[in-house]
Length: 137
Image 1 (cartoon, one colour):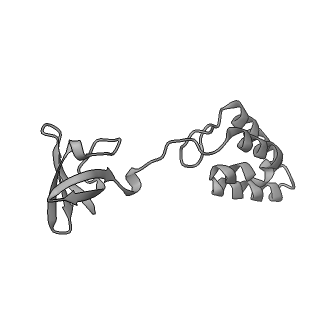
Image 2 (image 1 turned 120 degrees about the horizontal axis):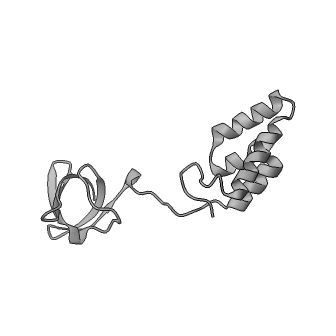
């Protein structure tokens, strides 16, 4: 069931979840998310015999921090295909990638330097994150 935390008391470690016009009380023992509950969080939970179990965060509150993109792939793309913004597309920076293509075409190839320099910066660890803020492998 999807709901919204209306209140939470840190002292007694209980809170109230609102679903439509119904209210459900939960205890921290039934909280399974990694972060503590806060008023305003959207949650998913189960109800058994009037008791709330397995309360977990949903939606935008879930953020996966594990690295997904590889540094060496981004660096090689930057060094060899950086003029076309391939490394930026790989990392999820689509607007910058398009700008690199436009610059390369507008300057008759001088955009190659921009991509090459960024490829070296990625390889040396000065550019460390993708567009979602995750570190590179």
